[in-house]
Amino acid sequence: MKITDITLDRLRLVLDPPFRAAWDPVPRGHFDATIVRVHTDEGITGIGSGDLMDGFDTYKHLFVGEDPLDITRHVKALETASFHGAPYWPLEAALWDVIGKVHGRPVSELFGNAARRLPAYASSGELKSAEERVETALKVREAGFRAMKIRIDRNRVEDGIAAVRAVRGELGDDFEIMVDLNQSWRMAGDTANASDLAKTRRIVARLAELDVFWVEEPLPYADLDGFKRLRAENPGVRIAAGEMQHSVPELLRWLEQDALDVYQMDVVLAIGMHRARTLAELAHLKHRQFTPHSWTNGIGVLANLHVAAGVGGGPYFEFPYDPPGWTPERRDFMLAEPVRVDADGCVEVPDAPGLGVELDEDAIDRWRVK
Image (cartoon, rainbow, N blue to C red):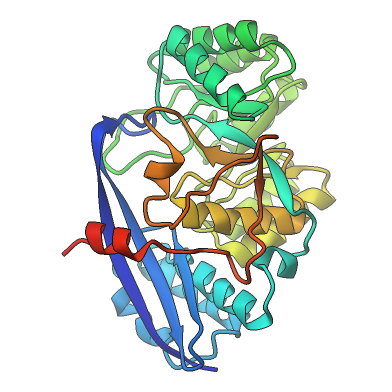
């Protein structure tokens, strides 16, 4: 089997009203997605998505003509290309989709088959008042979720803690709450400084009193000692991070120095599926948890789900969901059917071979960037 071509469909969904992502200083008037298709000489096509694949044409020749099943070779080639260009991990997802289709099995089975469904947490995206966040949390629980993540802005800490306190008071102790401080990385052009360690220590201590399940991305990635200090000072609160950490050696150093309770590497934005699986296994051997970041479109959600289910990630899987601003219909506009949770708040691995992606070609034609 040979790769005959790799094609990209660049899509742009207009967002009206705009989506005000907590980690982005600019409201989003559109949502971009790039669909990667790996074509083969045996008629099998693999599909991936996640990052935008900017500049990939420069490196396309590294893969065309090769056997798509040679995944170790492709991962190494992607690492060299990513060093010189951008992260191209959606291509690896498309290659795994081919591999699953060739073998007639879901990719999660090839990654270990530890679970067929995972409990999901509703991952919010916008900053909301305490009253608005409670209203959303009630909708989230009604949809089946047993956990949700709330964002706190570094410049509106009191508002954020008030939202956490209000949700805890309304939904009770049997509803899990995660908190994301969004301090580990920045959107392009956002030059503001992160909260310093002293301020962050106070925030985490206050959140511990509200029995949050974890505090996510509390510090910049460079502050390894700060992460370790937060863990030592707040033994009842898990510290989570790593979603956009692109360096496998650095993640190994984090594991060796026991910096985190929860490792969150995104398989289509950060380090790929193959490397994420290896690091997840190492985290589990150290009695730590792996639950990947999955704030991307439905294809990226599925790629992360297959790895998490394959290795037994958890205890919750990230499910981007913050109605009315962010819904499965917006997130998965390129799919024939959006990825959803079931009545028990779990997201199920598709039983189709590969990643289980079914595209809506009409939507792709409609939203393709000409």
